[in-house]
Image (cartoon, rainbow, N blue to C red; front, side, top):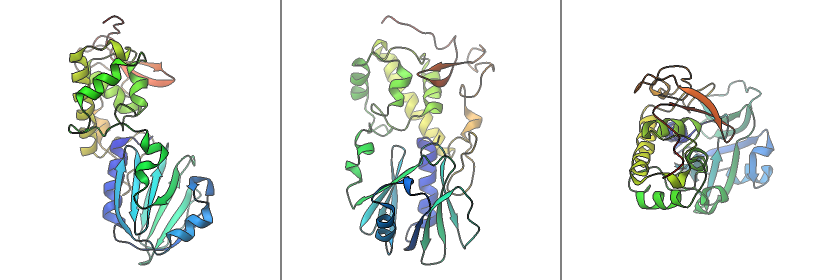
Length: 278
């Protein structure tokens, strides 16, 4: 699943490729991907719209158009492909933006889980999925006091709590495992048992891991490619995710894989000991 660094990489690629382009025609080949409005209205509304800019909030892409905002969530395997001229359309292409200059932007999705929503200009911040998100993982937005308070209120294990996107947005399975390893915190440690020093280090680790992954262009796991058809490079820097049985680079203990809240989870049993009491 594309996580925040992958979605940010897609945003940067799309910004370079389609900013300033005007939509001549839309084609929706799988209507269920469009949440609202209905597909025929979606197609008609976008004709003549210019892509002014593209933002990201959490894992959502937001296309700022002349009169609307298009919210796109890639979910499991959604991808965008930019083509300069008409090419054969494969069976996993579900939505096509035809631009006035003859180029196209195609949305591919093998599992068809991705979603698009068209809202009035300025209304994306009130979209149901975006309203629930916590702060972006940036030092000036992801503040220690708010993070500490949120953790103290929850008895949940730290990994599934972070995956909820409410305390901080953008963490998925890969980067939660990496941040918890960096902070030396067991993925099942109850959130309200974390000590102040652990919370401070975890916040720093989340910011660090995500910023480094963005700089590397994301992580390539299975089928992920960015908007330019390029693989990310962060997989070479992964310390625990996908490293089952390999020695921890800190203590040389073999990395373990288990399940936490039904998610495959990687950690070092020596560096990340489960501690129930405060």
